Amino acid sequence: MSRLREVLGVEVPIVLGPFGGLSSVELTAAVSDGGGLGSFGLYGYAPERIRDTVASLRAATDKTIAVNLWMPRGDEVTPDDVDVRRYVDAAGDLFARAGISRPEAPRAFIPPVAEQFEAVFDARPDVLSVVFGVPDAATLATARELGIRVIGTATSVDEARALDAAGVDAIVATGMEAGGHRVSFLRDASASLVGTFALVPQVVDAVGVPVIAAGGIADRRGVAAAFALGAEGVQVGTAFLRTRQSAATPAHREAIASASDTTTVLTTAMSGRLARGVPNDAVRAIEESGEIAPFPAQNWLTGVFRQAAAARGDAELLSLWAGQAAGLARLNDAADVLAELRAGLPL
Image: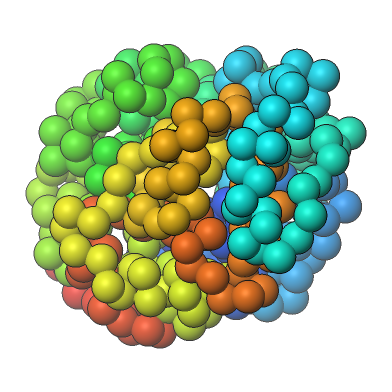
């Protein structure tokens, strides 16, 4: 039925979207135990936390697991590159609403990517997926030596070709309907907004490795459509994010449950990079201020008040990532979502 099952070592070609900051061991294990590929997003994780996370996943399931890293795109800034105080002051009302004081600039916004890769290789997950770029030859060679399969992510045909030429094992073709960050790397994300229905068959025609369709897939109908387009697997985020096993707050899950087809927007407000989610007071205030720091400074800045808001249950200050199929995300348990998706697989 699908080369992807053999490539990834899974029973069913259904991949959990790797949520940066919203992944949970429970959800990842639930998807893997159900025969799919449970994925865990490691954005911002320090090396020791990466090792501990993979160990926790291994303890939770004996099935195939994947972890996800963000590739450096080359436009990332450090605290020395930007006037952090300027952006903190512009968002001052949001810190006050969250009940916290304005933060000082950190020593670094994110851990060094090279150290994250080293930690992943030490931990040896079954699969490594990457976004925002193409792994270099040395990285792919190390992964092969360790028996780790590598999945790349493309938002355009050219990006898919670049990943295929590099030698990844599979490619996620992610349409603009998908929730969360637009992970473009060859062109600006705003110039790479191709829908899933148009993107998937063109990527299938352009590459030799199995293609995983992502974006706008939340039930059996989306799965069937993806396979009709030539995909050999699907990656699903929002439908799983709504479940009780995800790390999303109750307020975030409620935002997904209440969303319609036209609810979500694309914005750089919450991270400095284009992403799709449900708009709220924080998004509107930041966009109206016009003061959006470059990535990852903006993501660090909003992360300070987002953490406090999550503890208070204030959805208006969170990053409410969700895709355009949020209105189809109606199930509360990961096993039920997986069963619904499996019903759309070709016989």
